[in-house]
Image 1: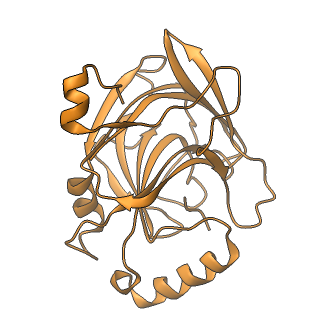
Image 2: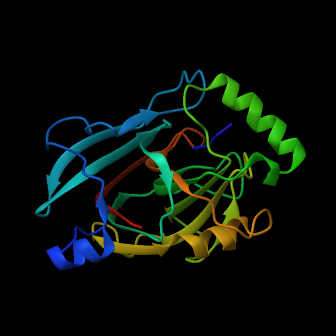
Image 3: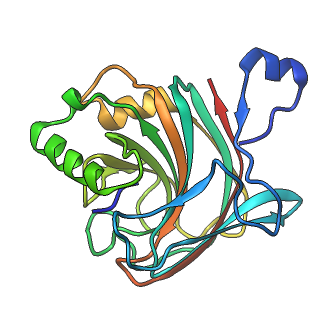
Length: 236
């Protein structure tokens, strides 16, 4: 089962918004704590590779998937209300065989995910029991609701669908196709609006955010992808 911005430009702006950058650390090394790699329970397949580099004058995370699965997770402790999430991303190689509507094609070259602390009593009964089982097998505190923004190879921008593996994870396509490959694109998302769009069938109250994850996976299509993320910033 598969689960799981721009830096402040002025001191006054920082004080007013209390934005929280999530830095990756030193170029040429693995991402710095509290960032850490997380996979599937008892994962035996290869992990997606994450490394910190300098690219185009910015500190960036290099994300490479090769028949692999993995997420780079930044927990937020304690959980907190979050208004917006900002980041920059750049896709360099997409997964041509992906199709998020199917289990066989449920891969993505780049995703930025947000974990929401949705109360279990909001989760439908059968899924609640499945979530409890999976949580018992994982060393990660698996969220009950995850929104993943993706750069997809085919689906139209604006597509919003649940994962083919679990409705605890739902996708929103922000970029599609190769037209902007090798170009940095800035995203800024209203998390409350996106949560209501994707999980409003279960809750009309927006839960606190427990973490952010970056990732790519190519384990279902046995494909390969390369992408980069920079300047991830939380706006409370």
